Image 1: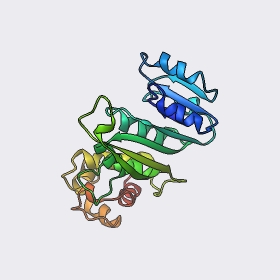
Image 2 (image 1 turned 60 degrees about the vertical axis):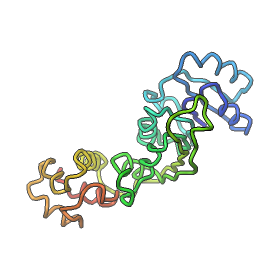
Image 3 (image 1 turned 45 degrees about the vertical axis):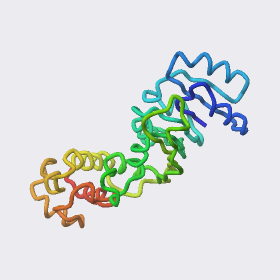
Length: 228
């Protein structure tokens, strides 16, 4: 297990006591690290790493093998950590994290939930199947935050569900959602496509569709049709 934001070790010790072979506890706050190390000393399976999880070189840190990532992610960087692990840490097969409720909604959103659906949702769907396990009310925290939280599980896919080149796929997705109220016709024009209607029709996408109406498969078809 790799735990992000181990704090004072409440979850860390619970993992160790469950018999996990190795628990890598990552903590950024240098004021907490000495106390975390003192707690971890009683558990041979626990290793403490003082580091910023947004900057960790995951392949070098984790190596090969199957990992599960977990943790109560900081609200301001939770999305960045999740997307970094999905894209750069293929050895992490499952993520179970607590994030701000609004972040959780974006991680699991589909075109059916348009207000929450965006480029983060598409990226998560590319790498994993995501599910909200439960809501967590502010009343269980001290000090009490002003926002609710939720626990999200992401199971990494064996392979992406679309065949499009990843670089081109994210070009299409990012350009489309940069002006999410505009049509896909406009997005492709901004990408330099001279005849966007014909290209979109060939990809079985309505040229007047907006990005929040399209699922990962549709974006994949558009990316495959995009000129190199």
